[in-house]
Length: 404
Image (cartoon, rainbow, N blue to C red; front, side, top):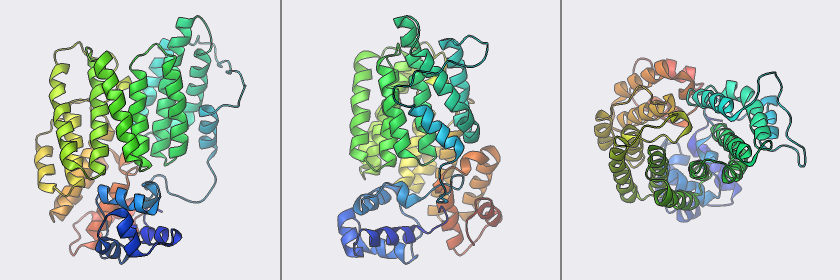
């Protein structure tokens, strides 16, 4: 459960792996004192690179340590009907022909792209319940489009199908279903190779890298992102779409490096990516930004704030955050990441009031996203473990179901 103490998870998984505290510390490459303090509840959280190291030592995915976010708690129950329908749409029965769409409106790639753009908006708004209901039908319709008409028609349909499968992969990652996500993304990659969109394969590669990160496969994540970025740089770097996709892949590679403990390398990659944003101003703008990787000067700064927080550099994180100017089209998901990292930095500096005020601001502007991040629970648990409880902390804890 999300409210289970991190130390209890580590102790339980360590016993299952038949490891002593000393042996786990050796395998993870961390101090045995870190393991002991966590298991004894003298330390309530750990940096993300440390969590990745502990997960590797235990032989588990990262999600086994961080737990589920409040909005998707582990109950032990079977999959919901909505999730079963999503699985079936991602992995339809073998040899079954694509089902013809219902309704009287003629299905076209243009219409499907508009529907998918709306679906991606719902994802960035954390409207996951709506997506669970809508996405199976979108996947079925997109699969049908990829199988009919001329070769050009099928290529356009495959592009839509690949983008729909990529969205299914993102949703599955958010729900903690990384195996389903990988199945969706592998099928998305196959559709992309048959599509008319040369940037779709590298965009999906970025999603695969993210899924690998969640599975604690950091080296695999780096290799996927670097390979795809090199391909885009060679073939598609003369358009705004190409620059955005390339930049998103470089940011992904930097994130993997940081989680592996190499902050300096990650910081260097982020600075290279930030320099490339100047090229965007000289190129024709992207037609539909919702369908292309998020990449801008502000998104890079948001990621740099996150990396600084994860590597115990709260002063640097807050300094970077002060220089961010978010455009109006910044997705709520990115605003959420920024505010959570600012709150984390304030906790690290002992600024409990500022941390709570930041979380309360997040609750006002993106309440759904707040419940889809385990970091929210970690911050509140750390604040509650401190000697001073600012006004508003109790209500925040109650809203997330954090045990008293």
